[in-house]
Each structure stands twice: as C-alpha cells, then as structure tokens.
Image (cartoon, rainbow, N blue to C red; front, top):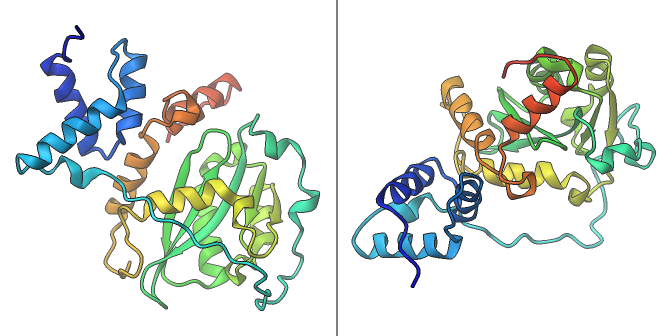
Length: 255
C-alpha cells in the first residue's frame, strides 16, 4: 500500500500552485527534492479542493487550441535591410549556447500600449517591457533597455515580421548582435516566443488595456514566469539555467 504524501508536502504543493506552477512542474521539482508525487495525484488534490469550495483550481492555466493560417498572403510590406532566417547560423537551432533570442510584441487593447517580449532559446529566459505604442522607435527603446545590461549574452535576435521591428539594424549596432526575420506567418519559427507569449496572457489577458499596468506588475510577472520550473530544462527554472551558464562562461551577471 502506498502511503499518502506528508502534510508538509501538500503545503509545498499549495505554495507552488499559488505561484502558478502547473501540477507537472510541481511533480518535477518534488522529484528533484527526493519526493515521488505524480502530477495526476496533484490534479486529484486540486479537484477535491474545488469540491470543498477551494480556489486552487483558479491557478491552473487554460490551454486553447490555436488556429493555423493557410495560404494567407503577406500584405505587410518589406522591412528595410531585412535578413532572412534562411541564413541564420545553424547553431541557433541547436539551443547549445546562450544568447540567441526571439522577439515579438503582445497587444492589450487595440491601439494602446504593448509589451515587447524577448525569449532566450537555450535557457528559456523570458524578458518583457511596456512600450507606450507599437512604433518602431519605442519598440527599439524597450529591446535595448532589456538587453543592454546583458549584451554579453546577446548574439542573435530573430524577429516577427511586424513593422515595429523596422529599427532592427540600430538594435544590432547597439547590442553588437545579428538580427534575422522569420518567414511571414511562420510563427513556429519563433515557437519559444509564441509559447512564452501565451504564458504571459495569464497575467495580461488579450483585449485588456495595458495602460494602467505598472513596472512593478511587469517585474512581478517576469519573476513568476522565470522562476517557474520547466520540464524541458529538467525542472530547473530559466533563471537557474541562464545564471549557471553565464557563470560557467566566467561572466558574472545579476538578474
């Protein structure tokens, strides 16, 4: 007969749920700590809590099916100096080094402020900041503000094809990095960034204005997402992997 997990383990599970960890992430972290607790068991615990009138279920993320576009023509025009992902160094696809980033923007209400998002391919570190609008100059300002403090770990940036990235050459010059553009409507070529944007929606839902979002709220969401363990990282967090690799390279960095 299998003994039920100890009380302190369930207390830890609840703490993780309140930090928006998924049951699978919690199970993975517990395994690293020497405790065996399946994610199915955690789901059952959440279900029992819900039946008692609890709120643990409110911390679970909803997964919605994405609609793929087929054969939609690109009407956005060409960005000056655009360099195709086709000639991006092959090492970027390997995720074997720090410094290869993917860039995108996340909108709130139409025409209002946006979040400029940056995802590092190896560590899955996810950075974002608010721009007052989607203009190329403001988006450039946010990208440089986020990445300049860690420019030693910026080698390439792969962009979406939006006109907001028209100042990509200026960003490359400032950060001493290379910029590339995915093919139009090939979101899977920036799959990490697309997935990370989906996680971000848990804190900043689609259609809700970002005008009143504060820097403190942005930092809080960024910390939660980057301290969330990932299965693909052996249930380490993006912060852990990024800092471990940065220190291995002999370049101290504080995030």
